[in-house]
Length: 371
Image (cartoon, rainbow, N blue to C red):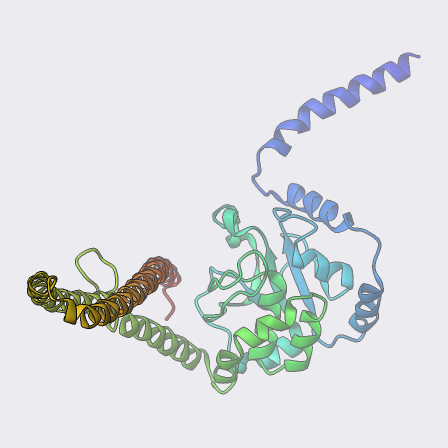
């Protein structure tokens, strides 16, 4: 009994003793290894597709490794899925990787000149969250050939369309594409439903990067592409005319003013004609009064009255048709104005969004400081 009590006390003391280490995320060697082992053990039963990739991974010619800091969601983490499929192997923080190490702390970009290193020594990535990248001790990761990835656009569901925000599988595939291992890059991306879209989005850039001979040419292609995108955006913004409210000038407003002027002129002519008609009516009434006593003109007066009634009915019909046409024109003009206002509002929002993306891109380029 005394031995059992002593053992339980020792266990409590150990729990209290090691509790602060788990709270402080200092990423020491022991803590990192514990997190890495725990993350690698998490996973559901493999599907048929995963079993197929596990078999294919047995003959995969490129060595792939990963430093896993356990910051990502295990269900969404592409690095851990690559590990489950058998393509990637997790390594300790103290382990030195002699191949290509893809890290943001590098000073040189990956290029086709690194093909032999990739083929003989492999590629290693850092599995961490982009939101916590500042807390990663990149200095403790010992590698023989640190490399940066050039400008590429992410196609993963979390950061789709954002430059540089690549996942582990995208980073590995990009390294393989640039160094000439195209089939291997597609094979790695094949384990993800959205994997093929990453190559489609960046196809033009990959075709240009693979033609380079060294890191300097890759950086030059990258800078030329970014400058072209910025110039295209400025040209599109310069071609849009804005009024004093910051919205695009509505060409229908000018046309509407012209229509209003024409309507006023037509209304003036109609008023003038109405006055003449009133004078004619007065004369006809006087004539009718003069001939009331004349029994011989009764028949003529009846015919004239019938003609006047017919003319009055025709005029009423014409007025009704004109009013209907005017109402239809006003309704169509109102619909056009509403659609135009909505379109201008969308254009304004798109321009604001593009400006924000441009500022964000400039900040990211300033942080990289590529040579």
